[in-house]
Picture 1: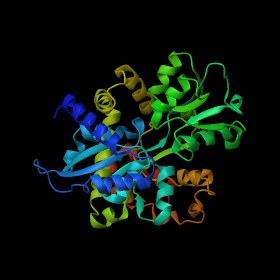
Picture 2: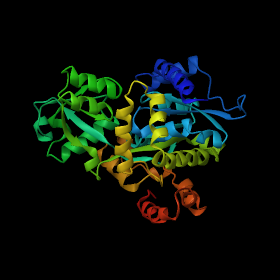
Picture 3: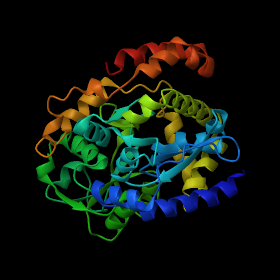
Picture 4: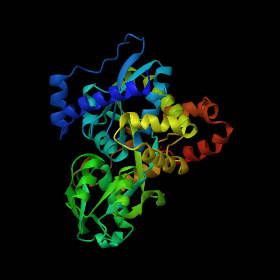
Length: 369
């Protein structure tokens, strides 16, 4: 299938997903059970196994899935993957209902969801650096000037909220020093709120913030400059799926690793794959965003869930609303054993070459155990 046809199919998938996406887990579950059958795991007419992966954001965090689909890496492993957009908590509901086999989810939301009953497990991480920018109206000149100002978020406790709290702390501000304004789901809603004057600042991903820079809005901070602010995504799966089909997670991780290798080697394919899922973006902006990810080596070649990222999220967690996170044994819901096994088998050396050995050793020492 060529990219133009895939683009049309992906657009239809996004429209279907948007109709499913809810405001709460309970509502999502009702809709999924009432209107949808469980995930179709039977082989389709091509002989490939059909399955679904949820992604909650159209950004660089989902780039490995886009390349895996458009570059044929899922097919290589006998999989026909439908990538379905749906903002949190749609992905959690899709996993628990059996409509999706995997979600590429933020670490914050994954730790929270996993700590509720232990039924969801994190098996890898393709991104630990968020290339966000904190954008503000033109009259604001620094992060410190945001005291008592309105900051746009999707919802309290979501990933951009936590990242913003971590950034504010570097400038002597706490979450109580600003006003948090819900500005709609996704980057588009937050950007529109800033342009419309409903908020004074908000966290945005590229290429969205490129446009606002050109319109005169201020970039107060670029997350690429802060190595100690983790903005991690993880491969989240249900424990039931992992136990009933132990080979599936490894196949998906292999496909994503090969897609990441292709990402670094083939800018043209990476840009076209992204545009297949976000055709409204200008190709030159996506190419500029590609350079940011490639130059900073943002996508993880050795996709461990990292100890530092987990500890950072737990320290930032709102334990008043999520008391179950206090004292929870996260080793029950974080499984790095697949990455360990792939290293032992020489998979990453075969994929990236012998120069990857040093990175393997370094990331293994940083992995959550």
